[in-house]
Length: 630
Image (cartoon, rainbow, N blue to C red; front, side, top):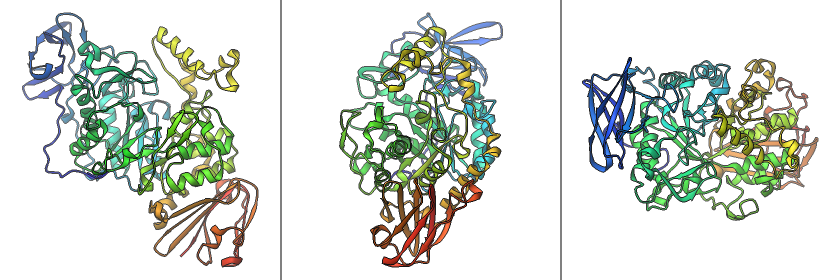
Protein backbone atom coordinates (compact mmCIF):
# COMPACT_ATOMS: atom_id res chain seq x y z
CA UNK A 1 0.00 0.00 0.00
CA UNK A 2 1.34 3.43 -0.95
CA UNK A 3 1.70 6.19 1.65
CA UNK A 4 -1.58 8.04 2.09
CA UNK A 5 -3.64 5.45 0.23
CA UNK A 6 -6.85 4.58 2.12
CA UNK A 7 -8.05 0.99 2.17
CA UNK A 8 -11.35 -0.10 0.61
CA UNK A 9 -14.32 1.16 2.61
CA UNK A 10 -15.92 -2.29 2.65
CA UNK A 11 -13.73 -3.49 5.53
CA UNK A 12 -15.43 -4.13 8.89
CA UNK A 13 -15.58 -1.12 11.19
CA UNK A 14 -12.84 -1.09 13.80
CA UNK A 15 -13.65 -1.38 17.50
CA UNK A 16 -11.29 -1.23 20.46
CA UNK A 17 -10.74 -4.88 21.50
CA UNK A 18 -9.95 -4.19 25.16
CA UNK A 19 -10.78 -1.72 27.92
CA UNK A 20 -14.34 -0.85 28.95
CA UNK A 21 -17.00 -1.16 26.23
CA UNK A 22 -20.53 0.12 26.89
CA UNK A 23 -23.24 -2.30 25.71
CA UNK A 24 -27.04 -2.10 26.00
CA UNK A 25 -27.05 -4.42 29.00
CA UNK A 26 -24.04 -2.98 30.82
CA UNK A 27 -20.28 -2.64 30.29
CA UNK A 28 -17.87 -5.30 29.14
CA UNK A 29 -14.41 -5.11 30.71
CA UNK A 30 -11.40 -6.79 29.12
CA UNK A 31 -7.82 -6.48 30.34
CA UNK A 32 -4.54 -8.23 29.61
CA UNK A 33 -3.03 -9.40 32.92
CA UNK A 34 -1.21 -12.66 32.09
CA UNK A 35 0.45 -13.19 35.47
CA UNK A 36 -2.72 -12.58 37.53
CA UNK A 37 -4.77 -15.58 38.64
CA UNK A 38 -7.76 -13.46 39.59
CA UNK A 39 -8.86 -10.06 38.28
CA UNK A 40 -11.82 -8.08 39.57
CA UNK A 41 -13.40 -4.85 38.44
CA UNK A 42 -13.44 -2.48 41.40
CA UNK A 43 -16.41 -0.15 40.89
CA UNK A 44 -17.03 3.00 42.90
CA UNK A 45 -20.73 3.54 43.38
CA UNK A 46 -21.62 6.51 45.57
CA UNK A 47 -20.44 5.65 49.08
CA UNK A 48 -19.53 2.03 48.46
CA UNK A 49 -17.02 -0.01 46.51
CA UNK A 50 -18.06 -3.21 44.77
CA UNK A 51 -15.95 -5.94 43.18
CA UNK A 52 -16.97 -8.03 40.17
CA UNK A 53 -14.83 -10.99 39.07
CA UNK A 54 -13.69 -11.31 35.48
CA UNK A 55 -13.22 -14.67 33.78
CA UNK A 56 -9.83 -15.80 32.45
CA UNK A 57 -9.74 -15.85 28.66
CA UNK A 58 -7.20 -16.71 25.98
CA UNK A 59 -3.71 -15.17 25.83
CA UNK A 60 -3.72 -13.88 29.41
CA UNK A 61 -6.87 -11.78 29.13
CA UNK A 62 -9.58 -11.48 31.75
CA UNK A 63 -13.02 -10.37 30.64
CA UNK A 64 -16.61 -10.08 31.74
CA UNK A 65 -19.84 -8.11 31.52
CA UNK A 66 -21.00 -6.09 34.53
CA UNK A 67 -24.73 -5.36 34.16
CA UNK A 68 -26.04 -1.86 34.64
CA UNK A 69 -22.70 -0.05 34.39
CA UNK A 70 -23.02 3.04 32.21
CA UNK A 71 -20.77 5.79 30.90
CA UNK A 72 -19.21 7.85 33.68
CA UNK A 73 -18.75 4.95 36.11
CA UNK A 74 -15.38 5.02 37.91
CA UNK A 75 -13.39 1.80 38.19
CA UNK A 76 -10.03 0.11 38.70
CA UNK A 77 -8.82 -3.48 38.33
CA UNK A 78 -7.88 -5.42 41.45
CA UNK A 79 -5.24 -8.07 40.82
CA UNK A 80 -5.17 -11.26 42.92
CA UNK A 81 -6.94 -9.58 45.80
CA UNK A 82 -4.16 -7.02 46.22
CA UNK A 83 -3.77 -3.44 45.02
CA UNK A 84 -6.08 -1.93 42.41
CA UNK A 85 -4.83 -0.07 39.36
CA UNK A 86 -6.26 2.12 36.57
CA UNK A 87 -7.16 0.43 33.30
CA UNK A 88 -4.07 0.33 31.03
CA UNK A 89 -6.43 1.17 28.15
CA UNK A 90 -8.52 3.71 30.04
CA UNK A 91 -10.39 6.15 27.83
CA UNK A 92 -10.57 8.71 30.63
CA UNK A 93 -8.72 9.55 33.85
CA UNK A 94 -10.82 12.36 35.37
CA UNK A 95 -8.63 12.56 38.51
CA UNK A 96 -5.28 12.09 36.80
CA UNK A 97 -3.14 9.02 36.17
CA UNK A 98 -3.27 7.81 39.79
CA UNK A 99 -7.05 8.05 40.09
CA UNK A 100 -9.74 5.65 38.90
CA UNK A 101 -10.57 5.20 35.24
CA UNK A 102 -13.94 6.29 33.88
CA UNK A 103 -16.17 4.41 31.46
CA UNK A 104 -16.68 6.33 28.18
CA UNK A 105 -19.21 5.55 25.48
CA UNK A 106 -17.69 6.85 22.21
CA UNK A 107 -21.04 6.49 20.42
CA UNK A 108 -22.87 8.81 22.78
CA UNK A 109 -21.48 12.06 21.32
CA UNK A 110 -22.96 13.14 17.96
CA UNK A 111 -20.62 14.27 15.20
CA UNK A 112 -21.47 17.05 12.77
CA UNK A 113 -18.48 16.78 10.43
CA UNK A 114 -20.06 14.39 7.94
CA UNK A 115 -18.82 16.31 4.90
CA UNK A 116 -15.18 16.21 6.01
CA UNK A 117 -13.19 14.28 3.35
CA UNK A 118 -10.12 13.45 5.41
CA UNK A 119 -6.60 14.84 5.16
CA UNK A 120 -4.01 14.22 2.47
CA UNK A 121 -0.29 14.83 2.52
CA UNK A 122 -0.34 16.86 -0.70
CA UNK A 123 -0.61 20.55 0.08
CA UNK A 124 -0.26 19.97 3.82
CA UNK A 125 0.70 22.96 5.99
CA UNK A 126 1.07 22.04 9.67
CA UNK A 127 0.57 24.31 12.68
CA UNK A 128 2.20 22.79 15.78
CA UNK A 129 0.41 23.71 18.98
CA UNK A 130 0.81 22.97 22.69
CA UNK A 131 -2.72 23.00 24.13
CA UNK A 132 -1.70 24.22 27.58
CA UNK A 133 0.17 27.34 26.43
CA UNK A 134 -1.63 28.22 23.20
CA UNK A 135 -4.37 30.14 25.04
CA UNK A 136 -4.73 31.55 28.58
CA UNK A 137 -7.17 28.80 29.58
CA UNK A 138 -4.93 26.06 28.24
CA UNK A 139 -7.77 23.76 27.10
CA UNK A 140 -9.15 22.08 24.00
CA UNK A 141 -11.90 24.70 24.15
CA UNK A 142 -9.30 27.43 23.96
CA UNK A 143 -7.94 25.91 20.74
CA UNK A 144 -11.48 25.81 19.34
CA UNK A 145 -11.66 29.56 19.81
CA UNK A 146 -8.56 30.02 17.63
CA UNK A 147 -9.56 27.80 14.71
CA UNK A 148 -10.98 30.69 12.68
CA UNK A 149 -7.71 32.60 12.97
CA UNK A 150 -5.73 29.52 11.92
CA UNK A 151 -7.97 28.98 8.92
CA UNK A 152 -7.46 32.60 7.86
CA UNK A 153 -3.72 32.15 8.33
CA UNK A 154 -3.75 29.46 5.67
CA UNK A 155 -2.62 26.30 7.45
CA UNK A 156 -4.40 23.03 6.65
CA UNK A 157 -3.88 21.04 9.86
CA UNK A 158 -3.34 21.68 13.56
CA UNK A 159 -0.84 19.33 15.18
CA UNK A 160 -1.37 18.98 18.92
CA UNK A 161 1.60 18.12 21.10
CA UNK A 162 0.83 14.90 23.04
CA UNK A 163 -2.50 14.94 24.85
CA UNK A 164 -2.41 11.49 26.50
CA UNK A 165 -2.92 11.71 30.29
CA UNK A 166 0.19 12.88 32.13
CA UNK A 167 0.91 13.71 35.79
CA UNK A 168 0.54 17.21 37.19
CA UNK A 169 -1.06 20.40 35.96
CA UNK A 170 1.21 21.14 33.01
CA UNK A 171 3.71 19.24 30.91
CA UNK A 172 4.91 19.14 27.31
CA UNK A 173 3.03 15.84 27.08
CA UNK A 174 5.96 13.53 26.40
CA UNK A 175 5.62 12.13 29.94
CA UNK A 176 2.22 10.62 29.10
CA UNK A 177 1.25 7.36 30.82
CA UNK A 178 -2.35 6.63 29.75
CA UNK A 179 -2.16 6.36 25.99
CA UNK A 180 -5.92 6.21 25.43
CA UNK A 181 -7.06 8.98 27.79
CA UNK A 182 -7.07 12.63 26.64
CA UNK A 183 -5.65 14.76 29.43
CA UNK A 184 -8.41 15.68 31.86
CA UNK A 185 -7.04 19.17 32.46
CA UNK A 186 -7.41 20.00 28.76
CA UNK A 187 -11.05 18.94 28.72
CA UNK A 188 -10.85 15.15 28.47
CA UNK A 189 -12.64 13.05 25.84
CA UNK A 190 -15.54 15.44 25.30
CA UNK A 191 -13.25 18.43 24.81
CA UNK A 192 -11.05 16.68 22.27
CA UNK A 193 -14.04 15.43 20.28
CA UNK A 194 -15.48 18.93 20.13
CA UNK A 195 -12.14 20.31 18.97
CA UNK A 196 -11.83 17.78 16.13
CA UNK A 197 -15.46 18.17 15.10
CA UNK A 198 -15.23 21.97 15.03
CA UNK A 199 -11.89 21.90 13.18
CA UNK A 200 -13.36 19.71 10.45
CA UNK A 201 -16.34 22.00 10.02
CA UNK A 202 -13.88 24.89 9.72
CA UNK A 203 -11.96 23.01 7.02
CA UNK A 204 -8.95 22.09 9.16
CA UNK A 205 -7.45 18.71 9.92
CA UNK A 206 -6.15 17.63 13.32
CA UNK A 207 -2.94 15.65 13.80
CA UNK A 208 -1.92 14.17 17.16
CA UNK A 209 1.66 13.87 18.35
CA UNK A 210 1.89 10.37 19.89
CA UNK A 211 4.72 8.84 21.93
CA UNK A 212 5.36 5.14 21.33
CA UNK A 213 9.04 4.97 22.33
CA UNK A 214 8.63 5.21 26.12
CA UNK A 215 6.17 6.11 28.87
CA UNK A 216 6.53 8.74 31.57
CA UNK A 217 8.05 7.97 35.00
CA UNK A 218 5.03 8.86 37.15
CA UNK A 219 1.68 7.09 36.91
CA UNK A 220 2.75 4.28 34.59
CA UNK A 221 1.10 1.09 35.90
CA UNK A 222 1.75 -1.23 32.95
CA UNK A 223 4.27 -3.33 34.91
CA UNK A 224 1.56 -4.16 37.45
CA UNK A 225 -0.14 -6.07 34.64
CA UNK A 226 2.88 -7.53 32.85
CA UNK A 227 6.64 -7.11 32.68
CA UNK A 228 6.43 -7.99 28.98
CA UNK A 229 5.47 -4.45 28.05
CA UNK A 230 9.10 -3.40 28.47
CA UNK A 231 12.54 -4.70 27.55
CA UNK A 232 16.11 -4.16 28.76
CA UNK A 233 17.51 -5.18 25.36
CA UNK A 234 17.40 -1.54 24.27
CA UNK A 235 17.65 1.80 26.01
CA UNK A 236 16.05 5.18 25.36
CA UNK A 237 17.19 8.53 26.80
CA UNK A 238 13.82 8.99 28.53
CA UNK A 239 12.84 5.66 30.09
CA UNK A 240 12.45 1.94 29.54
CA UNK A 241 12.17 0.81 25.94
CA UNK A 242 8.88 -0.79 24.92
CA UNK A 243 9.11 -4.45 23.97
CA UNK A 244 8.23 -4.68 20.29
CA UNK A 245 10.28 -7.70 19.23
CA UNK A 246 11.19 -9.83 22.26
CA UNK A 247 9.44 -12.68 24.07
CA UNK A 248 5.89 -11.77 25.04
CA UNK A 249 5.87 -8.70 22.77
CA UNK A 250 2.60 -9.40 20.98
CA UNK A 251 0.35 -7.41 23.29
CA UNK A 252 2.81 -4.56 23.72
CA UNK A 253 2.63 -4.19 19.94
CA UNK A 254 -1.15 -4.41 20.03
CA UNK A 255 -1.38 -1.76 22.75
CA UNK A 256 0.30 0.74 20.44
CA UNK A 257 -1.20 -0.30 17.11
CA UNK A 258 -4.72 -0.27 18.50
CA UNK A 259 -3.99 3.11 20.07
CA UNK A 260 -3.18 4.53 16.64
CA UNK A 261 -6.43 3.09 15.29
CA UNK A 262 -8.32 4.44 18.30
CA UNK A 263 -7.39 8.07 17.73
CA UNK A 264 -8.24 7.87 14.04
CA UNK A 265 -11.59 6.17 14.57
CA UNK A 266 -13.06 7.22 17.91
CA UNK A 267 -11.78 10.81 17.72
CA UNK A 268 -11.66 11.12 13.93
CA UNK A 269 -8.24 12.74 14.03
CA UNK A 270 -6.63 13.02 10.64
CA UNK A 271 -3.11 11.91 11.33
CA UNK A 272 -0.40 10.96 13.77
CA UNK A 273 3.06 12.37 14.28
CA UNK A 274 5.18 9.54 15.74
CA UNK A 275 7.67 10.91 18.25
CA UNK A 276 11.35 9.91 18.13
CA UNK A 277 10.96 6.85 15.92
CA UNK A 278 14.71 6.25 16.12
CA UNK A 279 13.99 5.10 19.71
CA UNK A 280 11.33 2.60 18.60
CA UNK A 281 13.39 -0.59 18.41
CA UNK A 282 12.09 -3.55 16.42
CA UNK A 283 14.12 -6.25 14.68
CA UNK A 284 11.18 -8.50 13.94
CA UNK A 285 10.44 -9.48 10.31
CA UNK A 286 7.82 -6.76 10.00
CA UNK A 287 8.62 -3.48 11.69
CA UNK A 288 5.89 -2.26 13.99
CA UNK A 289 5.62 1.07 12.19
CA UNK A 290 4.85 -0.62 8.87
CA UNK A 291 2.18 -2.71 10.57
CA UNK A 292 0.83 0.31 12.44
CA UNK A 293 0.52 2.41 9.27
CA UNK A 294 -1.33 -0.29 7.35
CA UNK A 295 -3.73 -1.18 10.14
CA UNK A 296 -4.40 2.41 11.13
CA UNK A 297 -5.33 3.34 7.56
CA UNK A 298 -7.55 0.28 7.31
CA UNK A 299 -9.32 1.27 10.52
CA UNK A 300 -9.76 4.91 9.46
CA UNK A 301 -11.16 4.10 6.03
CA UNK A 302 -10.37 7.62 4.78
CA UNK A 303 -7.25 9.59 3.85
CA UNK A 304 -5.00 10.20 6.88
CA UNK A 305 -1.37 11.24 7.24
CA UNK A 306 1.25 9.44 9.32
CA UNK A 307 4.45 11.34 10.03
CA UNK A 308 7.70 10.15 11.61
CA UNK A 309 10.20 12.16 13.60
CA UNK A 310 13.56 10.45 13.08
CA UNK A 311 17.04 11.93 13.49
CA UNK A 312 18.65 9.25 11.30
CA UNK A 313 17.40 10.69 7.96
CA UNK A 314 16.08 7.25 7.02
CA UNK A 315 14.03 7.21 3.81
CA UNK A 316 12.61 3.77 4.69
CA UNK A 317 9.94 5.54 6.68
CA UNK A 318 8.49 7.20 3.58
CA UNK A 319 9.01 4.43 1.05
CA UNK A 320 6.12 2.13 0.11
CA UNK A 321 6.09 -1.26 1.78
CA UNK A 322 6.48 -3.02 -1.57
CA UNK A 323 9.88 -1.29 -1.87
CA UNK A 324 10.98 -2.28 1.62
CA UNK A 325 9.74 0.84 3.36
CA UNK A 326 7.30 1.44 6.20
CA UNK A 327 4.69 3.23 4.11
CA UNK A 328 4.48 6.45 6.13
CA UNK A 329 3.58 9.75 4.48
CA UNK A 330 6.06 12.28 5.82
CA UNK A 331 9.31 12.52 7.74
CA UNK A 332 10.68 15.39 9.79
CA UNK A 333 13.79 16.62 7.97
CA UNK A 334 15.80 18.62 10.49
CA UNK A 335 18.75 19.36 8.21
CA UNK A 336 16.97 22.38 6.74
CA UNK A 337 16.27 23.85 10.17
CA UNK A 338 19.80 23.22 11.39
CA UNK A 339 21.41 24.75 8.30
CA UNK A 340 19.21 27.86 8.59
CA UNK A 341 19.81 28.18 12.34
CA UNK A 342 23.60 27.91 12.05
CA UNK A 343 23.63 30.34 9.13
CA UNK A 344 21.53 32.95 10.94
CA UNK A 345 22.78 32.65 14.51
CA UNK A 346 26.22 31.05 14.37
CA UNK A 347 25.18 28.28 16.79
CA UNK A 348 27.74 25.50 16.55
CA UNK A 349 27.43 23.39 19.70
CA UNK A 350 25.64 20.07 20.14
CA UNK A 351 24.19 18.69 16.92
CA UNK A 352 24.69 22.07 15.22
CA UNK A 353 28.41 21.33 14.93
CA UNK A 354 27.63 19.04 12.00
CA UNK A 355 26.51 22.03 9.90
CA UNK A 356 28.55 24.67 8.10
CA UNK A 357 25.65 27.12 8.07
CA UNK A 358 26.01 28.30 4.48
CA UNK A 359 23.56 29.31 1.78
CA UNK A 360 24.82 26.33 -0.23
CA UNK A 361 23.82 24.00 2.61
CA UNK A 362 20.35 25.54 2.81
CA UNK A 363 19.95 25.13 -0.96
CA UNK A 364 21.15 21.53 -0.70
CA UNK A 365 18.42 20.76 1.82
CA UNK A 366 15.75 22.31 -0.42
CA UNK A 367 17.02 20.42 -3.46
CA UNK A 368 17.38 17.00 -1.83
CA UNK A 369 15.29 16.98 1.36
CA UNK A 370 18.28 15.82 3.41
CA UNK A 371 21.80 17.21 3.67
CA UNK A 372 23.16 14.12 5.42
CA UNK A 373 22.74 11.09 3.18
CA UNK A 374 25.39 8.79 4.62
CA UNK A 375 28.21 11.20 5.43
CA UNK A 376 30.06 10.92 8.74
CA UNK A 377 28.48 12.90 11.58
CA UNK A 378 30.72 14.33 14.29
CA UNK A 379 27.78 14.63 16.68
CA UNK A 380 26.60 11.03 16.27
CA UNK A 381 30.06 9.56 15.76
CA UNK A 382 28.94 7.49 12.78
CA UNK A 383 27.63 7.91 9.23
CA UNK A 384 24.18 9.49 9.21
CA UNK A 385 21.41 9.37 6.65
CA UNK A 386 20.31 7.44 3.59
CA UNK A 387 20.30 8.37 -0.07
CA UNK A 388 17.28 10.28 -1.34
CA UNK A 389 16.08 9.08 -4.73
CA UNK A 390 12.59 9.75 -6.09
CA UNK A 391 10.89 10.72 -2.83
CA UNK A 392 8.44 13.59 -3.26
CA UNK A 393 9.26 16.96 -1.74
CA UNK A 394 6.02 16.80 0.22
CA UNK A 395 7.39 13.78 2.16
CA UNK A 396 9.95 16.02 3.92
CA UNK A 397 8.66 18.25 6.74
CA UNK A 398 10.65 21.49 7.04
CA UNK A 399 10.57 24.12 9.76
CA UNK A 400 12.52 27.09 11.07
CA UNK A 401 11.04 26.57 14.55
CA UNK A 402 9.35 23.73 16.41
CA UNK A 403 8.77 22.81 20.04
CA UNK A 404 12.12 21.01 20.29
CA UNK A 405 14.26 23.61 18.58
CA UNK A 406 12.79 26.38 20.72
CA UNK A 407 12.06 24.55 23.97
CA UNK A 408 15.35 22.69 24.13
CA UNK A 409 17.27 25.96 24.25
CA UNK A 410 18.16 26.88 27.81
CA UNK A 411 15.98 30.00 27.76
CA UNK A 412 13.44 28.93 25.15
CA UNK A 413 14.28 31.63 22.60
CA UNK A 414 12.42 31.64 19.31
CA UNK A 415 14.21 32.39 16.05
CA UNK A 416 12.54 35.82 15.96
CA UNK A 417 14.26 36.59 19.29
CA UNK A 418 17.69 35.83 17.83
CA UNK A 419 17.68 37.57 14.42
CA UNK A 420 16.45 40.90 13.12
CA UNK A 421 13.00 41.25 11.60
CA UNK A 422 14.08 41.50 7.92
CA UNK A 423 16.14 38.30 8.04
CA UNK A 424 13.35 36.56 9.96
CA UNK A 425 11.03 37.49 7.10
CA UNK A 426 13.50 36.12 4.54
CA UNK A 427 13.83 32.82 6.41
CA UNK A 428 10.03 32.60 6.63
CA UNK A 429 9.72 33.09 2.87
CA UNK A 430 12.30 30.40 2.13
CA UNK A 431 10.41 27.96 4.36
CA UNK A 432 6.97 28.67 2.92
CA UNK A 433 7.98 28.88 -0.76
CA UNK A 434 10.15 25.75 -0.80
CA UNK A 435 8.41 22.64 -2.20
CA UNK A 436 8.68 20.65 1.02
CA UNK A 437 5.86 20.42 3.62
CA UNK A 438 6.15 23.37 6.04
CA UNK A 439 5.52 23.23 9.77
CA UNK A 440 4.87 26.36 11.81
CA UNK A 441 5.28 26.50 15.58
CA UNK A 442 2.51 28.35 17.39
CA UNK A 443 3.12 32.09 17.52
CA UNK A 444 5.71 31.98 14.75
CA UNK A 445 3.31 33.71 12.37
CA UNK A 446 3.28 36.88 14.47
CA UNK A 447 6.82 36.69 15.92
CA UNK A 448 5.58 35.94 19.44
CA UNK A 449 7.59 37.52 22.22
CA UNK A 450 6.97 34.69 24.69
CA UNK A 451 9.59 31.95 24.99
CA UNK A 452 8.68 28.29 24.96
CA UNK A 453 10.40 26.80 27.97
CA UNK A 454 10.67 23.26 29.28
CA UNK A 455 8.11 22.85 32.08
CA UNK A 456 6.81 20.03 34.26
CA UNK A 457 4.66 19.62 37.37
CA UNK A 458 5.98 16.42 38.94
CA UNK A 459 5.81 15.36 42.57
CA UNK A 460 8.57 17.10 44.61
CA UNK A 461 11.15 14.30 44.66
CA UNK A 462 10.91 13.60 40.93
CA UNK A 463 10.67 17.33 40.24
CA UNK A 464 14.00 18.00 41.96
CA UNK A 465 15.64 15.37 39.76
CA UNK A 466 14.11 16.89 36.64
CA UNK A 467 15.30 20.38 37.58
CA UNK A 468 18.84 19.16 38.25
CA UNK A 469 18.87 17.06 35.08
CA UNK A 470 17.62 19.90 32.94
CA UNK A 471 20.39 22.22 34.07
CA UNK A 472 23.01 19.49 33.82
CA UNK A 473 22.14 18.99 30.13
CA UNK A 474 23.81 22.32 29.36
CA UNK A 475 27.05 21.82 31.28
CA UNK A 476 29.00 21.18 28.03
CA UNK A 477 27.81 24.42 26.42
CA UNK A 478 30.23 27.31 26.68
CA UNK A 479 27.61 29.71 28.03
CA UNK A 480 26.76 27.41 30.93
CA UNK A 481 30.00 25.77 31.98
CA UNK A 482 29.92 27.91 35.09
CA UNK A 483 27.56 26.23 37.61
CA UNK A 484 26.37 29.67 38.73
CA UNK A 485 25.21 30.46 35.19
CA UNK A 486 23.47 27.09 34.93
CA UNK A 487 21.34 28.12 37.90
CA UNK A 488 19.87 30.89 35.72
CA UNK A 489 18.22 28.29 33.49
CA UNK A 490 14.49 28.43 34.31
CA UNK A 491 13.35 25.76 36.73
CA UNK A 492 10.99 23.38 34.87
CA UNK A 493 9.01 22.88 38.09
CA UNK A 494 8.34 26.57 38.70
CA UNK A 495 4.83 27.71 37.77
CA UNK A 496 6.28 30.88 36.30
CA UNK A 497 8.22 28.81 33.75
CA UNK A 498 4.93 27.48 32.44
CA UNK A 499 3.16 30.86 32.60
CA UNK A 500 5.92 32.63 30.66
CA UNK A 501 5.45 30.16 27.83
CA UNK A 502 1.83 31.12 27.19
CA UNK A 503 1.13 33.08 24.03
CA UNK A 504 -0.25 36.62 24.06
CA UNK A 505 -2.77 36.67 21.21
CA UNK A 506 -2.85 40.47 21.40
CA UNK A 507 0.46 40.32 19.53
CA UNK A 508 -1.42 39.32 16.41
CA UNK A 509 -2.61 42.90 16.31
CA UNK A 510 0.62 44.50 17.51
CA UNK A 511 2.71 42.48 15.07
CA UNK A 512 0.19 42.67 12.23
CA UNK A 513 2.83 43.18 9.54
CA UNK A 514 4.50 39.83 10.27
CA UNK A 515 1.13 38.07 10.37
CA UNK A 516 0.20 39.70 7.05
CA UNK A 517 3.41 38.36 5.49
CA UNK A 518 2.66 34.82 6.68
CA UNK A 519 -0.89 34.98 5.37
CA UNK A 520 0.28 36.22 1.98
CA UNK A 521 3.06 33.63 1.74
CA UNK A 522 0.62 30.84 2.49
CA UNK A 523 -1.97 32.28 0.11
CA UNK A 524 0.46 32.39 -2.80
CA UNK A 525 1.78 28.92 -1.91
CA UNK A 526 -1.76 27.57 -2.03
CA UNK A 527 -3.14 29.44 -5.03
CA UNK A 528 -0.14 29.48 -7.37
CA UNK A 529 -0.17 26.35 -9.55
CA UNK A 530 3.63 26.24 -9.79
CA UNK A 531 4.22 26.56 -6.06
CA UNK A 532 1.42 24.14 -5.21
CA UNK A 533 3.21 21.37 -7.14
CA UNK A 534 5.58 19.77 -4.62
CA UNK A 535 7.95 18.34 -7.21
CA UNK A 536 11.69 18.21 -6.54
CA UNK A 537 12.26 17.21 -10.18
CA UNK A 538 11.01 20.67 -11.17
CA UNK A 539 12.99 22.50 -8.53
CA UNK A 540 16.47 23.97 -8.81
CA UNK A 541 18.00 25.45 -5.66
CA UNK A 542 21.43 27.02 -5.43
CA UNK A 543 23.48 29.56 -3.54
CA UNK A 544 24.37 32.84 -5.24
CA UNK A 545 27.30 33.82 -3.09
CA UNK A 546 27.43 33.75 0.69
CA UNK A 547 24.15 35.55 1.41
CA UNK A 548 21.63 34.59 -1.28
CA UNK A 549 19.58 31.41 -1.75
CA UNK A 550 17.90 31.10 -5.15
CA UNK A 551 15.11 28.64 -5.91
CA UNK A 552 13.74 28.13 -9.42
CA UNK A 553 10.49 26.16 -9.74
CA UNK A 554 8.49 25.40 -12.85
CA UNK A 555 5.35 23.57 -13.96
CA UNK A 556 4.09 23.61 -17.55
CA UNK A 557 4.67 27.09 -18.91
CA UNK A 558 4.81 28.64 -15.45
CA UNK A 559 8.15 29.70 -13.97
CA UNK A 560 8.81 31.03 -10.47
CA UNK A 561 12.03 32.27 -8.93
CA UNK A 562 12.67 33.03 -5.27
CA UNK A 563 15.69 35.20 -4.56
CA UNK A 564 16.28 35.22 -0.81
CA UNK A 565 18.93 37.74 0.17
CA UNK A 566 19.97 37.56 3.82
CA UNK A 567 22.71 40.14 3.35
CA UNK A 568 23.31 43.64 1.93
CA UNK A 569 21.97 44.90 -1.43
CA UNK A 570 23.33 42.89 -4.33
CA UNK A 571 23.51 43.21 -8.10
CA UNK A 572 23.43 39.89 -9.91
CA UNK A 573 24.51 39.55 -13.55
CA UNK A 574 23.76 36.57 -15.79
CA UNK A 575 27.27 36.57 -17.19
CA UNK A 576 28.53 35.82 -13.69
CA UNK A 577 25.66 33.64 -12.48
CA UNK A 578 24.78 30.55 -14.56
CA UNK A 579 21.58 30.23 -12.50
CA UNK A 580 20.28 33.53 -13.92
CA UNK A 581 21.52 32.80 -17.42
CA UNK A 582 19.52 29.56 -17.50
CA UNK A 583 16.23 31.28 -16.66
CA UNK A 584 13.73 31.81 -19.48
CA UNK A 585 13.51 35.28 -21.03
CA UNK A 586 11.33 37.80 -19.24
CA UNK A 587 9.73 40.00 -18.53
CA UNK A 588 9.74 38.88 -14.92
CA UNK A 589 7.14 40.32 -12.57
CA UNK A 590 7.26 40.48 -8.78
CA UNK A 591 4.60 38.49 -6.96
CA UNK A 592 5.82 39.16 -3.41
CA UNK A 593 8.59 41.15 -1.76
CA UNK A 594 9.23 40.80 1.98
CA UNK A 595 10.68 44.34 1.97
CA UNK A 596 7.25 45.79 1.11
CA UNK A 597 5.95 48.34 3.59
CA UNK A 598 2.82 46.22 4.19
CA UNK A 599 5.17 43.71 5.83
CA UNK A 600 7.02 46.33 7.86
CA UNK A 601 9.87 46.46 5.37
CA UNK A 602 11.91 49.28 3.85
CA UNK A 603 9.79 49.56 0.72
CA UNK A 604 12.75 48.93 -1.60
CA UNK A 605 11.98 47.16 -4.86
CA UNK A 606 13.77 44.64 -7.03
CA UNK A 607 14.81 45.76 -10.52
CA UNK A 608 15.27 43.41 -13.49
CA UNK A 609 17.26 44.63 -16.49
CA UNK A 610 18.00 43.01 -19.85
CA UNK A 611 17.53 39.43 -21.05
CA UNK A 612 19.57 36.25 -21.48
CA UNK A 613 23.29 36.75 -20.92
CA UNK A 614 22.75 40.48 -20.43
CA UNK A 615 20.15 39.99 -17.68
CA UNK A 616 20.88 41.68 -14.36
CA UNK A 617 18.87 42.07 -11.21
CA UNK A 618 19.30 44.62 -8.43
CA UNK A 619 18.21 42.98 -5.21
CA UNK A 620 17.55 45.01 -2.04
CA UNK A 621 19.28 43.95 1.14
CA UNK A 622 17.66 41.54 3.59
CA UNK A 623 14.64 40.73 1.51
CA UNK A 624 13.13 37.77 -0.31
CA UNK A 625 11.52 38.36 -3.70
CA UNK A 626 9.24 35.93 -5.52
CA UNK A 627 9.10 36.54 -9.25
CA UNK A 628 7.13 34.96 -12.10
CA UNK A 629 7.17 34.64 -15.84
CA UNK A 630 4.48 32.83 -17.77
